[in-house]
Length: 218
Image 1 (cartoon, rainbow, N blue to C red):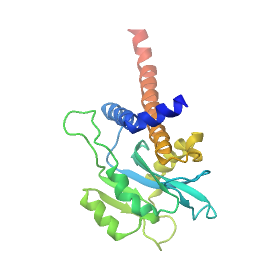
Image 2 (image 1 turned 90 degrees about the vertical axis):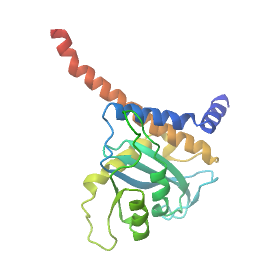
Image 3 (image 1 turned 135 degrees about the horizontal axis):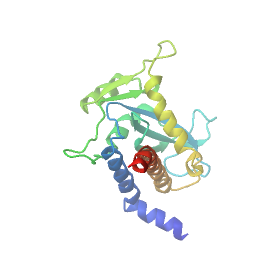
């Protein structure tokens, strides 16, 4: 219960969100963030005990579920993630998801918050939302419904699928066991932060391995 209370209280205080933002800033400072494009998508998870932000999932025989919505930059690093009921349409969450991206520091000048392009699949095909995305200063690249299979956007969109694979590797995110939506959102934000930390750690390790022979020779 102590761990649960700490998770709840720290989430309410914004600790996990600030941790994610700090790690994003470190990634940007290391030139590991690419804002030239971003990709968005949603993924269903089963909600075993119900609760807020759940609904009958159309892809899971009408069982109660939730949806994770994620936006990633060009390399698949999660910039923001949101939670809704499993019955919510992906396109309705496009603008809230983009707006959930925090101002990311790490370099001199103004923080960066908006990607240049955003890629999405046919589930986001709606001219109203294309217009709203353009109003945010972002160019939408969204597959059209009714076109032949193979829009060609997969070469850019696969990174968001890879991000979901990493997030759902965590058992607490693969299936939602929490009745309280804020507790599950805490795990979701913490999962994004861990992915960012691992990317930073791997980059530091690669840099160390690359420079170690030079240091030995020196």
